[in-house]
Length: 299
Image 1 (cartoon, helix red, strand yellow):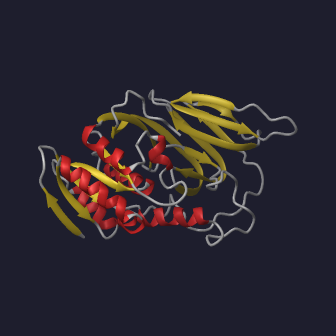
Image 2 (cartoon, rainbow, N blue to C red):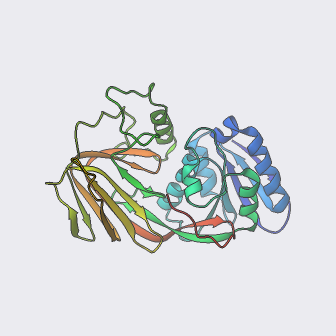
Image 3 (cartoon, helix red, strand yellow):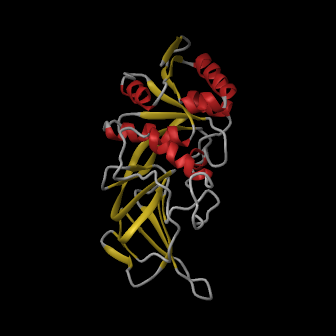
């Protein structure tokens, strides 16, 4: 781990540069460091791995944390702050840097600029926005959305017999799993996902009311915070012939139960579980976003 201190104006920033970002796009990392260093007093940390990443974040003191990295680094920082019970009193800033399809999709959906200069300027000139999170009954945090079943980057179920070698998206998930601290083997699996054997039969409850029961085969379920302290639940029934209309629900607490199922939470594939409850944590994340007058977008 390397630390580099620079001096500029009054605000103090702790800039944590994810090692993946340094490897895949060193030029964007250099630009981010230059822009941030010119506008604030920065302490730059170059952790070699997730343990040092966690240690630097925990020792930030009064400095505002700035993460330079992709969606995996963003989720890692939010998860660590949640486990330390410091999200309420912390404002997180992010400069998205990454290479490859989909690695910045979460950052984009939250309203973060994906251009390095614009993102670094937003860190210096933007304003705090409080965003809703989902927190599950194993204390896992979801920044974006939950999807059942977990889908590939192209939006389709994994093909029969697919492996990590034939599915680049799974290698990304496995890399994220290895970087999460501490490891949660009961929640996240790194094994190759089996192909879907048929439609899911799940009970979906919203604030204690059953939206769909086990007798209705399902194609997919999604749970997404809507920014009002509630989550939007969208259930797509299995269609035979004409497309079935989706079932919609809104509430603060969502429980899915039934046969073993896996789900995607942000970029993490988790499970299998037989029951999982997500509760909306209203305004749980303070994120620095551009002062454009536009509300953060959700996926």
